[in-house]
Image 1 (spheres, helix red, strand yellow):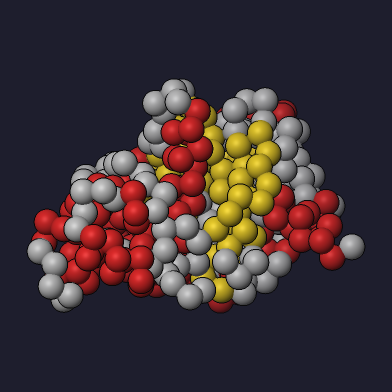
Image 2: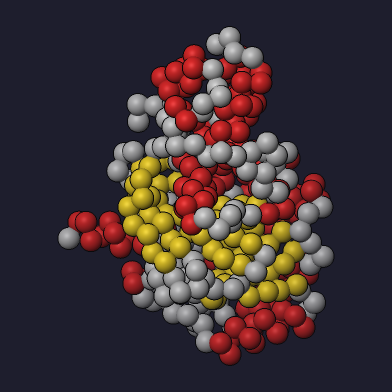
Length: 354
């Protein structure tokens, strides 16, 4: 890429960059408003910004680094975007409609090295991290789509749960959050932003010590080491005991509620005995933890895994509830399209190679 994305700057970083080049502090705020409130497509559209400034920005940066490659729309209003990056790589971004607002799921890496055996994202190994600007641009692309519909809708919630491990791209992920939270721009509230990790213990602690103050979700998916190692290879390096120690640090440091994500795989981890084991693991943490049960979206390449029966999901839920554990079942979106994370991308790449 010849020029990086202007979206990669936080407001403080943009202010400092322009100040070093002789521009007053207010100029950065002016540019910021054009980017995130007026959502211009080019630097030339920043009509009230000094021409010397816009020429400087155009020389060093670009606003658009990706293009829409495929768009799938579900009957429930979910839209999955497949964006092509400047280097030809493909990433997924998803818009979901909820009663509480519009949520966007963003991707942080091209591919994934975590290697969860049930997940479509890990079918293609990570080739690189996304820049902070590329993560922000996904959100901007979705917002521009909404703007074009003319209904005045805006993205209100963000989940950092797309392709890749967000904590493996910690700095760029952090800059993204600071950009979208900024009250002078998109102004998306911290409590409306959730970051999901497969369990990088050291980064969970760093996240707890940061000033980001957004929600945390941890993908557990099994209540013991033997089973978790079988379905998530990361457990070999970071076993449950080490992960729980990091979670305890997060809870003690932030005193914030967090989510434990648990995907239900038929005949693998969805038995009542697994629910009781999970309840025991969560018992001392139950005041600040909610377990989110996730019905599985089958992936062709992982045919050994099937969706749990509704009776099994209910029994698992009831077992946790009876043990005093806060629990919910994730509302499904986009079941009539390539809903699973990474599924659309892997299908498009497979088709291109055939």
